Length: 136
Image 1 (tube, rainbow, N blue to C red):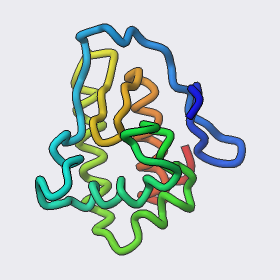
Image 2: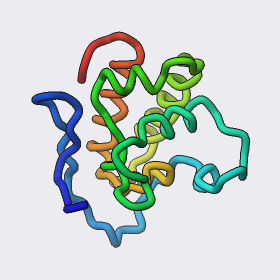
Image 3: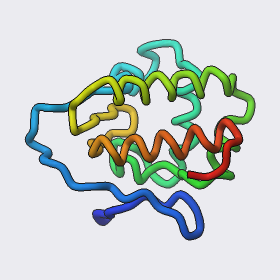
């Protein structure tokens, strides 16, 4: 998949993926790397949510571009899950980013390095859809 500079999150909305120094060691690591291995752990609602959003490719190949971030697909991915558990896990990740001063976020499950601000924009988008507070 060709390099992209933004994530499409709707017909006319996108999240810009800002530049950062990929060689920096100032990186906050999130997501459970062991959860990407089949059968390694019991899956949480958030793990299943990621799996159901991963429809365009696989994260190991395309990183964050493997996921469909449009509102209707986010809601569809959450159907049948404990939505409050998904929201709480997303909020915990968001809190960890806010509490860290590291400029880069490495999310293992999404197979992506993010500039801190870009990751927070994605979190805001997900949480606004899942809590019914509108699009980002």
